Amino acid sequence: DIQMTQSPSSLSASVGDRVSITCRASQSISTYLNWYQQKPGKAPKLLIYGASSLQSGVPSRFRGSGSGTDFTLTISSLQPEDFATYYCQQTYSSLTFGGGTKVEIK
Amino acid sequence: QVELQESGPGLVKPSETLSLTCTVSGGSMTSYYWSWIRQPPGKGLEWIGYIYYSGGTSYNPSLKSRVTIAVDTSKNQFSLKLSSVTAADTAVYYCARVNPIAVEPFDYWGQGTLVTVSS
Image 1: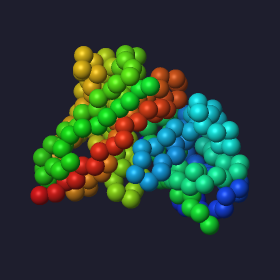
Image 2 (image 1 turned 180 degrees about the horizontal axis):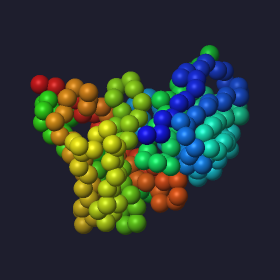
Image 3 (image 1 turned 180 degrees about the vertical axis):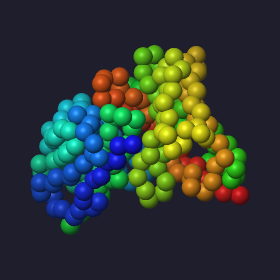
């Protein structure tokens, strides 16, 4: 099974900050990596697919990068509505999610 | 706009079978995979499995022995059965559409339904 490890598990940031979240796969997954945002009590929302493609309707401040085993989700200027938990997901072999990164207000 | 809605009992007794249905509206089920995902309270997401509109399935190996996913395209529905449940199966259960591009992201989700396993 492919394990997905996200870091950090949580972070505190201020509005306007640049934030980066890392996801590492236990083996190479090419770019079979998707990112989701989840707010409390809501279903996850697709942000990035294929490691770097922005889902329609998602603000351009969200950027995904990486390939192989190391991936990053970057929010260029954190907005109030971005405080949420973020999950990576690999679909290269079977399907697994990372453990999540909670972005909190500093 | 595609919408998904989960339905089913919110309380299931230990050792019994959990049964949920996902109803798809606003689009066809044809040519898509359809998935179930769960999230225990306060924890992360766990993929359960998915089904192609024509019936082919793939399951999470850790749940495979207890899971059955079926589809009924005439009703625009797919379903989940999870047998021999325990308290560890208590979770919010989501259904989702799998986009058919290569990396298969989940692009539409239901709102989720909480299922509690308790006597």
